[in-house]
Image (cartoon, rainbow, N blue to C red):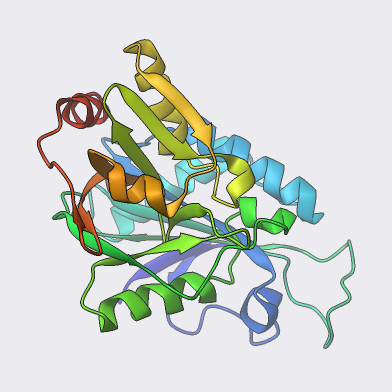
Length: 270
């Protein structure tokens, strides 16, 4: 049976969360997904900066330091007899009474779980979906526990025979895929939806933008239209687990999988 870390203790994963926990009953919480290898979490401080910002916005307080969390993660990997893999840090507002009102004094529930994943994933083809990102909501920039839009969008794409879904926002502009930021390459230009599109301020997104600027690419964080998807040379998506995944095509449009700009970025990421 897998072990998880919850509020300072390593326990069996089964039946570990209270039925009154607001993360379970209301989706009232957030999470970070990170990668652990060689005793450390990749880009840990960047993840913690984002976590701290999100918790502050939501009025959720946790008592654990960064060192507490990294040490708990190391111990958890040992307990599960793993050397590397995915770290999921979940924070809910904690256990509360029925209803949506919350008490600022609630004790947050903090859970760390680990799992194995293949980081080298095959390129996929993507399609549009009717499920959208609401860029009008300030919560669109946070990794909230309620991921139903992305879940249904991914399922929609699978039912259509595609590997992932391209999610548009309320204005009809490109935002992201179901679990990743998206980048387009056109010549020496690297184009990605701005944060105003409702996409997540991804950790690897930031890293890719820095790589691109260092290599003197023309970087544009802007409104991305469907027409841009149809005329791009190459497209790739990023998150902290897959790092970079190539996109074969968008519906009837096919992309160059050997684009030198994309391959150079991939090389620097890995």
